[in-house]
Length: 256
Image (cartoon, rainbow, N blue to C red; front, top):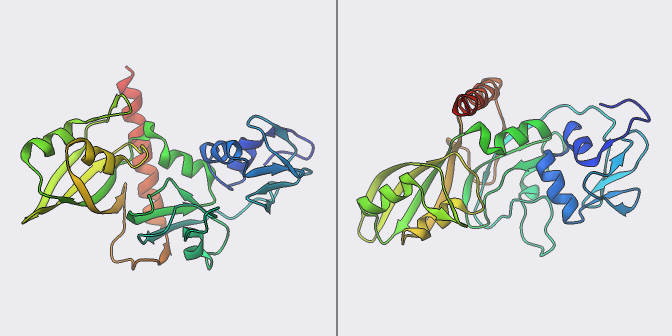
C-alpha cells in the first residue's frame, strides 16, 4: 500500500486495500455510504490511508493494513439482497458469510428473487476484473420460463435484444427441457446489466418463473447447498485468471 503521508484517491485506496472494487467504491461513495474522518466522502477525494479514519456503512476499515486475500463462492438463496447492509431491513447476503475468515464483499449481484452462485472477496482488483465487460467472462444461468419458448424467441435471445436503447451482446441459448406451459433454458451471457436475464426474457414475451446462476466462468455452483459458502480452490482461482486473460486478449484482437 502507499507510504505514510502519501495521498491517494479514496476509491483507489479502497480498491487497493481489498475492501471493494473501485467501481463498487464509487457506487458506495455516491450513495453516501463512505465517510472520511466522520464526513461523507467525495469521489476523487484524496486521503492518507495511514492517518485518515475511513468507514464503510459506519464500520471503520483499515486501509493501511495489508489483508489476506479471501475468495468465496456462496449459494445465494431467493429472498436475499446482494448487499452487506440494507436500509429496509431485508435479508442480506452478509448474514450468510458471518463465519467467513474476514470481511468480504459481493462481486456483482443477483437480484432478490434470483438464486445461485455469487462470488465474494476482499480483493478489489479481482472483483473489478470479474465484473468488467471487457474481460468477456461468461456467466451461466438456468432459467425456468412461462408459458413456453419458441425457436424464434430463443433465436432473439441468442442474437441480442434491445435494453435501454442498446443491443445486448450475443448469448448462448439452449433449451434444456419442455413441459406443458413451461420450459427450462440455459443462457450464457458475458455482460452484467441490471436484471439482464429477466429483462431479456421479458423483451421477447417470456415470464421468468425461476432464475439460478450456475457458473461464473470456470467456477461452478455444483452441489453447494443454498445459504452455504465455500472457499475457492487454487485451481478455480487459476482457471478464473486464465479466463480473464483470454477475455482481455479477445478484446485486444477486436480492436485490431
